Length: 348
Image (cartoon, rainbow, N blue to C red):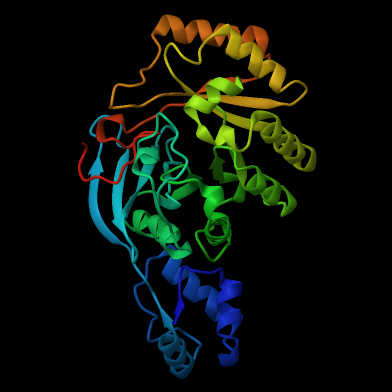
């Protein structure tokens, strides 16, 4: 059985090639299912025979996630959705509102690519779950299809920053990004699709070689290897020199400024030593540093005080000489912020 939302329109046409369906019909069906949330192949489409539609209906299926729970923050209107697919485990997606431009109100959706995560970053709730499985392409795509159907404004961006390490489910993540960006899919600009990694070097090199136009963000969090090992165990596999080598190759191929994410941990990675190490590590490399305050309900890690945060920004300004921005981490009150997704119902 051929599954909709599991391939691009070109791949869908190839899978149905023996039926010789018109390309325009395939594109119309892709729009109906992926963007508009149709749950079955329509019985009638203007200008096309009911016979070809019947044959497509017999050969295909339109899978759909089960919505287990949804909660909206009364504070900042972030919305968290808990889904179940056809495999084990549950996973979450977060709808991020961008309502600051009248007439251009829109959403970004933070999607999951795995159930759980094997990388066990010290401050991440998903990492404490362990790894259960990779999501299928359609399970990634349907997160956005369902959220779009539930939204009063369009989804205009995707970030692969939910549960899981996207580059450990590389093929399905890239395929989902292609479906999101193709004109008869979600029609989202490739540059508005961001894939985040904690530092899977072979994945970064493959991403570079394949010349994808999606944005890449690398989670760094520490520029001191021994400290990074305690926070991001992937450092023991792909150490900073190897990671930066891959990142430099990516920059050389794309000429894009590199975005590094830095989870700010009070009393841990906010020192001048860290700022100096980061400057040395990224010398001659144009970067943008995204500072993200930690969200850890366990209390093991805490956010820096205002004084500590300001001092760290000063250190970065003096040592780094590159753009630094503080990213707003919304949905904290519903456990929907960065590092808080753990596939539980409600806000707790």
